Image (cartoon, rainbow, N blue to C red):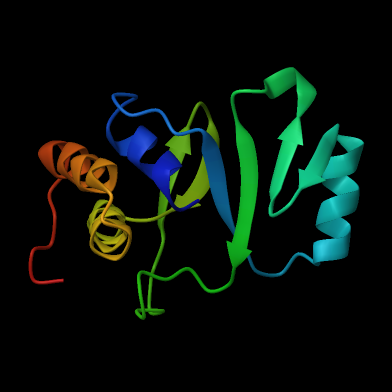
Length: 126
């Protein structure tokens, strides 16, 4: 998982993302569409939406996970309610949010980086 949902995890819910971004690597796009359709999701542009969960949608970004031009990302494994998920490290999450701040001039991304950095050690050299 990458993007704003990672901020939600690391900020312990202080930030709430409206989507879940996943890196799609070894799962074919066709199979993904079939599985999500079976679960009641419909494709709307690059997003998948589900009528019973209108406040949240899914997006699948291309492999590999990256921050800007840095494709050498090693994802952390975090356990949430008994499920293990691969997720940006706190440092890469902050880097991702700061890249969004610089590229999109989004103050929200900057504020999200601060939320994560306040709660987790960050590798400042990286």
